[in-house]
Image (cartoon, rainbow, N blue to C red; front, side):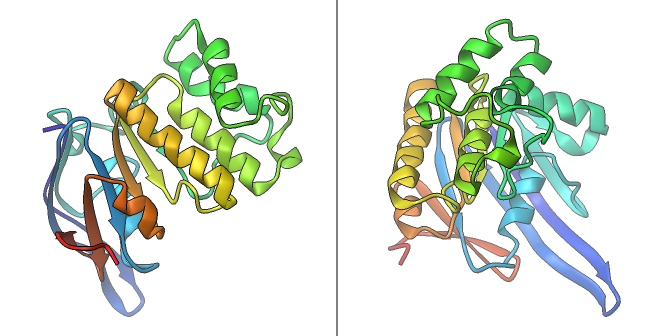
Amino acid sequence: MLIQTTQLTKNVETSEGILHILHPTDLQITAGETVAIVGASGSGKSTLLGLLAGLDLASSGDVSIDNVNLGDLDEEQRAKVRADKVGFIFQSFLLVPSLTALENVMLPAELAGNKAAEQQARELLTKVGLQERVQHYPNQLSGGEQQRVAIARAFVGTPKILFADEPTGNLDAATGGKIEDLLFEMNQASGTTLVMVTHDNALAKRCQRVFRMDGGQLTEVTGDVG
């Protein structure tokens, strides 16, 4: 099992008491699967994605990637697991302002010691339609262009798992469609496991499995997504 959680929870303390963001969750995702997580804003979808990727720590329970329990690792070890196996498309892009589009995409590959980092980065930026913008800095790019840089960065190194938080949320319909196709092409060509949070039911329907998050409770959708 590539991704597995056992009774995974996330709680935060507030002035009004404990807020249960994620109720005990058991989830199993096999290598090569495409999975969508849908649900209203604030239902806990992005929190779950962060826990699965090892970007956040659970309050209780376990999450394993490729048979490695992330709870047994320190931050440096979790970062290595992410570098070796995970790509992540953030809603807020998280590009480095002082780096060009090309340098932002190259960064994870360079950190992993990939000697072909620049070539791969240029190819990916061309695939997302930004070949003319490789030397532009994030503040010189539109929101949609920044999103495409973030997507290219997530693809570099062909990760085993790609987590995507609203991957087409900032894109126009035509560009969004191209990015969706790129996601599924990567899944087909490289066997990359896709786990994405989306409000787009059409995108969710393209996935093999769909889960709905409602008030911190995760359930698999067996009928029509809606």
